[in-house]
Amino acid sequence: MSTERTLVLIKPDGVRRGLSGEVISRIENKGYRVTSLVMMSATREILERHYAEHEGKPFYEPLVEFMLSGPIVAMVVEGNRVIEGFRSLSGATDPTVAAPGTIRGDLARDQGTKVVQNIVHGSDSPESAAREIEIFFGGK
Ligand code: IDP
Ligand code: MG
View (cartoon, rainbow, N blue to C red):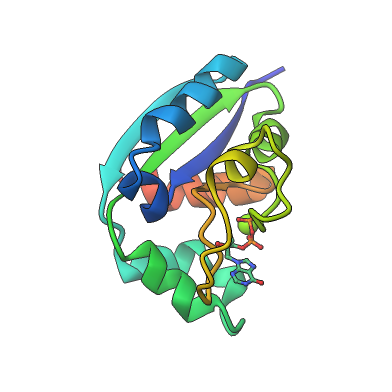
């Protein structure tokens, strides 16, 4: 059985608050392997591709602006069932209701902004993972 891969992003709120190490530790402590990692300033073009499924939603433009507000960390993470496993480590999208013990539940809260600031992104399916890894690491 081939090992699964997912794209993880540490969003600007996570980097700004000095939580990159904490997020990476949780991934490694769970037993997954980080196989590529880069700190970068995303471009609007990259983010519009990455978040294409959300175009037209009320939070879309705030989301893109938020993701442009500072550096992010992009990673490829590997392991059996890592897509599902990292989504489980992340917790629910809304950090107010994300379970304690999860990244979002422990480290984020509602900031009263138009876009939910929730520290991390993780791919939601094998198709999304392949597409998103190509966007962030395709040229490498
Ligand atoms: P996910 O990150 O848990 O997969 P998605 O539905 O894919 O959640 O949404 C992408 C990102 O857009 C979320 O992580 C969050 O930052 C933001 N977002 C999603 N839904 C809302 C909303 O209803 N209001 C404000 N921001 C949202
Ligand atoms: Mg998503």
